Length: 126
Figure (tube, rainbow, N blue to C red):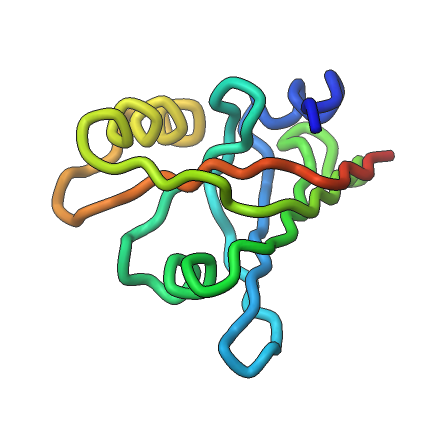
């Protein structure tokens, strides 16, 4: 599914976003994340051993809830699945791009990070 232009516009900003994944027992796990786009995919990053990475490796289904930074009452909900993991220098290029739009500086290199690329299956926005 191609990203809707309005969803892409919000993702290309610095939205307030929360990722929901499934724990091994099937219950939800939600955390705030930096998000953006990489081609027609949604990109986010995490440590390879974090709870969200472990959840997504076991079950790639997820939900994202976000609002644009300038309008907390405009909501976007996305359901999808991780279709690719990126590591190494290619990941750091994406990570730095996301970090700069949120913080103005590249992401620190003190811990290993990976990028998850998400293919949306449902996009709901108001």
